Length: 170
Image (cartoon, rainbow, N blue to C red; front, side, top):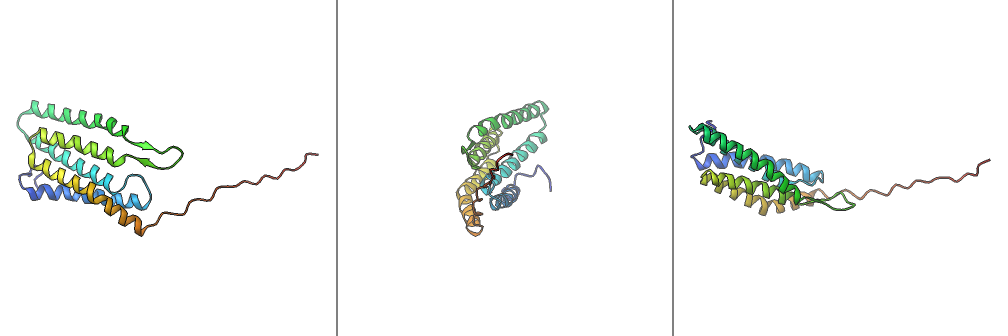
């Protein structure tokens, strides 16, 4: 399999689809263990990483070295910088073990990647990645609900009560 063979839409969808599936399987595991990053978050991250890798391979296979170096530095800078933006939407509920905003942070990250794909003129790859991201966001909620329906949450922990005897000192 040639790593730069992206002219065929079925090859793009296969690579992006397998990445999405693998990320989703990891997300199901995380949902079953009541972790904040579930099916949608890990599917988006995995699919986005596949898409950006595919774009990087396309850029490296180009013949103009100076353009390739510039594109790869841009990719690195955008991906590093977007982490700060994504971190800004992640909130932890005060006094609880709940985290909110992870799907939004993953969506921001994928949106940045989609922008880079479009910037490189990889229209088919961009449309495929966008379609899968949309499906993850719309269908992932249903998948998470089904998983959680069959794996009910554990009962809340009983408060720890410590009994201290008060003995008079001699």
